[in-house]
Image (cartoon, rainbow, N blue to C red; front, side, top):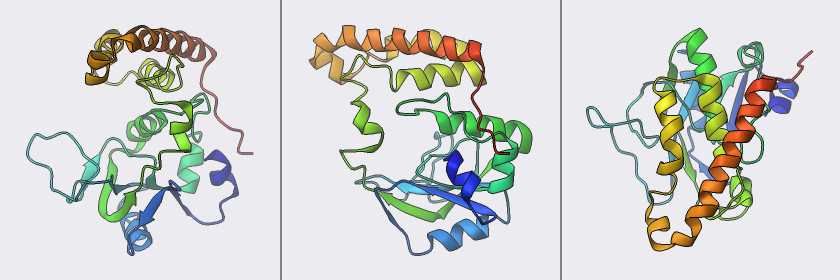
Length: 217
């Protein structure tokens, strides 16, 4: 993604997953929404989902049919002003492996400096969630002892320190095994906890080293 920022020729860079079906007005909607802000989150319909409005008090969903302002985006469909993204440092390359939560960390830096993100539901994609490739090549997070996903979660919490980050940090290991999968497959409890501890240890090490931003010069 940093390579894309560096080599792009236009003012706006649109990032999309490769397992999607774009809506006809995707590009037009992103361009129009960019007149309101420098970072635009598009709508993402996962398999079986339909576009629906949020109810009062309901947490953000990226199949929300109403435009609004948000503090996060989903990495498979967003656009950003190239120069602004580079001025923020680009994307932190410490998010290794599945790069889980890299969007939240970038959004945190953006919102601290520029305010909320524009959410534009007309900038729509249908996400196919292909079973092979992408982050799924690192294994399902419920069936692995590898820290590909847990590392990103801990690194984001430790680096960004969003509201309520410390209770989330303490609660995450137990939350990771409070699932239907672990209830019916209890032999995965120990590997899941091992992945949590390995991810936390790696995240602590990366936080001590500091962020890894690209050199855009």
